Length: 297
Image (cartoon, rainbow, N blue to C red; front, side, top):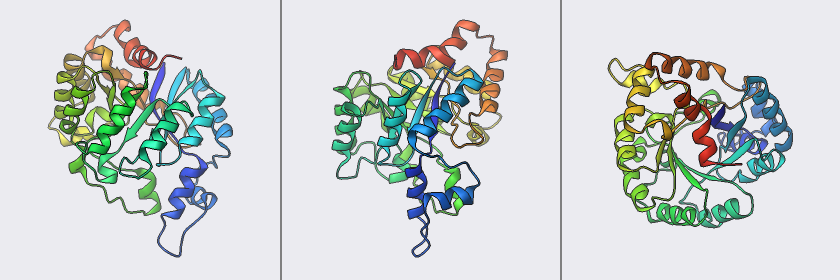
């Protein structure tokens, strides 16, 4: 079993949240961790070791680690370097930043990371922005590089816990905006997490039109509440019918310690597949094989 969606909450991640507190009340990474009641991350290497033990405890062979604030590529790179057979490095990037291209080139060529993570609603840019196209062009020149694009509803739980505003604009998170980019760069895999997070129909449409678009199954998928009488088995049934079993990537959206790896998500998704009678071969592809094919060790 592999997990295509885990967040790496490093010390730099918490330090960034501390700097985003209201003026005059900025806090250190340690103070932020204390407020949350979570375990201190320690060094990236220490955090990587803890995650390996956590994955071992649950029988997870490999996992994606997402650097969850722009500029934290180095933390995930150290984790990957420490356990290269266990982790695949993903990193969040703001393509509107002046150093976006140079950071991406460094992450791919020097740090050994594999996936560029875009959150258009968070940084409020269009996927039609020429700067996004430049990133796709760069990704196309590095074999084995994928682009993760968060679409649909966007809610960051840790920001809510800390009372930080989340001034996101979901208009920029429509999967349909990904169509042109995915069609123009057919050699680049594009991953839409959470089945499109509420924009399921649009995510399916793009996946149907572009065979290089993958759907990640992660999180509780509570967005199903936006759809009349849609259950998780319904979601899997439709996704399998449209995208097929080779373009679904199991993920949990696990993040902080001590909660660790979220087995409840795994069990719910495995249970959702049971009434579909998919068979062991298809389940192996969703829960492990597709990830290994996209990101061979």
